[in-house]
Image (cartoon, rainbow, N blue to C red; front, side, top):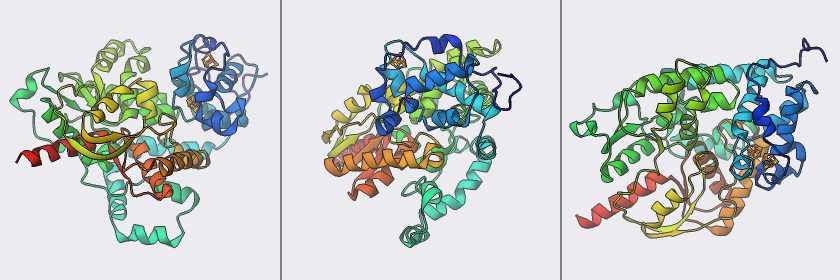
Length: 432
Ligand code: SF4
Ligand code: SF4
């Protein structure tokens, strides 16, 4: 096969032979893989996708449209990685496989270019993102949304995009809006940095404010240091590793002069930032700074041993965000925190840790598979009838709002920090 074939990928960012060789083809990951569960096809399984990456790497296959399709149907949920006995770093493999597509996608090149442009020039640029979100915020909170939904016009891709807006969008939260650190904030054990991200600050400002209040009750003063920005997870997942590294360097430079933990309330961002050391390991100037930064990153559920609790009445279905359960291996802490709340009855739904189909921009670009996975969640909610569905990731939050609508139940969807905040404030109201 000629190396100048138009389908031949540039191999500089290809998955390493060492990573690929760790797969011993045992198949233990198959039953955890959502796309395998839905299709029953080997080519839509982790083992199948790794095999295809090997074929391409070793020059035994071109990067064909079919291989692109099988790779792109992967949710990058990393459920396979969490159960793999050989320690295959599937998330890293898939990001590097996508990087090959970034250079030499055999199909949908135009769509990929538009996506890359938007991820670089809208999502990663706070002012542009804020301007883009202003009309979306108006629409989400207006009667126009109810009319549009009743009209039946929101079908297919348009419907998928529309469902990516929360039920209500509160005030945005931006680092520059916050006051300077208090005197107490100089103490490393009682202070930290709130990571504000991109979409999270625009659409889920309420969650950031709730996180600050919850941490304040636990004796930790969080500040949202200016200069930080998008974590780069969406770019890395789409194969734009070069730009993801640029964003990682920007965040490291902005936050490395601060002290204390870097608290993240978005599972996808937290997973990406805990892996900055890996992302920048090939850059001699940044590798050690990235590794030092990564160890400071904590999910918002990790540091709340001193949270005083409160009361929260209702049946609560906690759903594991993939990048919290599978990438960060955090499953118990959120459940433990919910378990401390008086009146809170935890309802475990089957498959709580199976991907909901949100997966960053997956619900927009793979709307069919995303819809199948959302329907599975809707069926589980309809059977369990929780009062509240709890998550720790913005994309999942939106997907669950849609699933709850499909289930036809009046459940609220809340971030874990919002639940803790509401519980704690009900406590203080009782004491007043
Ligand atoms: S990825 Fe891991 S679990 Fe899956 S087939 Fe390979 S070695 Fe087995
Ligand atoms: S990341 Fe998720 S969807 Fe992709 S192969 Fe692994 S388990 Fe399947």
